[in-house]
Length: 428
Image 1: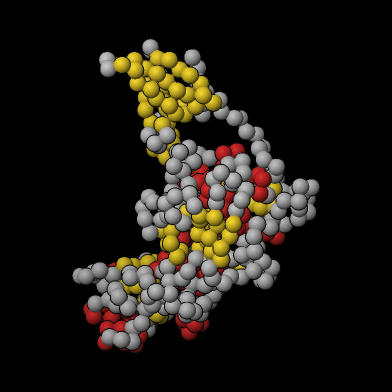
Image 2: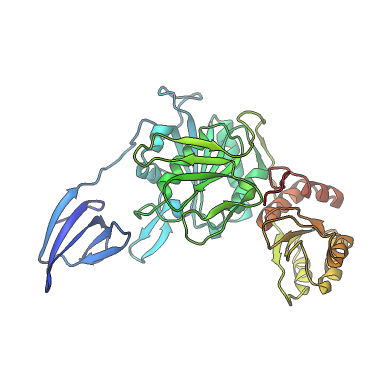
């Protein structure tokens, strides 16, 4: 029999020890075997001869499912009075599925595919979708951030009441921070991804996307990241974009706020997806408090260098020779490198290239006034990166150098809290 992908079946197969029963969802295959996705998340291939197949549930073919539409209505609201959101897709696991030719996960979903896979989104808002990139996030570049920022700005200017950006998780923190500096927003801008592809039973894609849509319809007029808050399907955290980091390679609760509390939580009930509740944990900028502004220029030639014992300070000379305009150092502890680095740092800063110090510790703040090495670094012209994440400091330096070139102004901007990247209250 021909089994359509997505059909839930129960297959009985005779073996030497009796009958084995498999139950799961039919998956695509390049072989003659029936491939089932079992409830435990694993796949099994079954030869079709001498099997008894019972269809439990046929797949739904969803086209424009839900109350919302896939295009923005004229004016701020449609006839159904749902808010108007724009989804800008850049790829990543949330827009991926297993390629059964290779067995690997690759970005193959369009925005419409996401909407059809998660019909609850159409009950939350009228949604307009646009695919900007179909890439895994390690392929993201500064030039792509600039285009994304422009697209976000244009969507808001054209009436979107909230923006969702689907993104791969590995470099989501960089992109989120970049948007925070480039776009001053009167509406929510929400980045969302998933740790597991949408065609896996353990996928976090649906819950994350539903939470993101609810936040995008809400009152938080900042760039935020919405991702699983625990290993179960209980809630998502709302993280401030400049303070969030992926801290686990594969866990669904990989994203955590560093040196700050999350803005809040979005509680999700799988039995009642429409019942979404919020809990706010810290202050945030509210809808329409700021005017829409785009400051999208970046200096792409900036680098992040991680110090380690025995590291050759000549790497600084290399980046200067390559024409780099700014450097972020990821130092040890309070923001240190070995003594032999100090004259190299001084040579770089005196040539007009800013060097910003951050810490590998992540938690806590840089303070180069405690030990002699730190004091020497300050005299050499280092800019203390306060408690910024190294990747946030890198993106901020790119942005600052896109706005200013005077060294005093660059230092002042780097040490000024612009998008929540520097904590006013230290969080242990």
